[in-house]
Image (cartoon, rainbow, N blue to C red; front, top):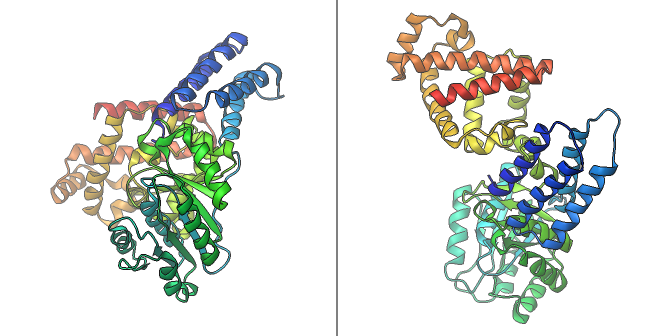
Length: 448
């Protein structure tokens, strides 16, 4: 997960509240210290940390809400203040005009070119016609790198590796741009925001007239993000930020907080090396994930990429009614594989982030999904539609045809029945029973 250590520390703070017999000033003080420690370890500015902790303490000791227990209120206050410090509102890139031109700016090593490819993939998956333009005339093989990314996602790349004039390169392509919904322009960087870079970016801005000028920054710069965001914003008027490499740094919290303080809205975050590892930044969903509460919006985004809206709606109805069969489970498994590693998907599901499932268990489950897929490929339509007909004779036949052991096939049938039971509990709202069942399933997975 992005910012693993921060997430683990904050979940520990939430656990402390949940296990407390009652909420008093001592508990609030201990909680505030936990949160301060967690944020400082993630390189968040000391002044910001003390501002947040002061507001949490003041609200926790003063506020009361009818119908909400002190514990629930305290968790809500922590959640709201963390969302507030990360910018509160989601800031998006809206595609209104055709083409919508997005110019990417940033220093060397920030990951602009990779981000250009990720952004192109993001918009392409949403049915938009996208083009990439390479205007970095200084970095060796910059055009070739973007061209390779474009080929991966079937997006055209325009540029001229022989030219040293970014303005003339863009003008050559300009008449073609009207054919596209989104045009993403990758510009050159420098070691620092020098006068010549400012002049180049201003000239490009005048010619390109971008709807969005996005600063790309690496998450490992931490608190320095505030200074960099302010400097770029004053020089060339940026409209937002994309923070990259958040998955591999402890300083990411500092970069996110610094951008919020500078007034530069974070629009996307890079959460991995793959082309699909780019997420819209939604402060409330991000904090929900850090606290183990899930991020339904991000989950729905991933689901839309893996399945059509009709498939999602149909499958959703079946699952919520507890009426799905193995064929539906098979489709869900296929969709989940498209959505990325199981560990990443699970952290988006409300409640699952708090189960603290060991990584070994998740790896075991991912291995099981592959085997179960083989088993289902050897089942008849009747068996997939009505798993209740499965007997020893049928299980033996499926095992021979798929190479999956009989015990693993029985476990699949058992898992199917457990899943139906969980979904019926969701429908009935019996969360206590559901938590008991999840713990039981966790125990089963550990033994496997």
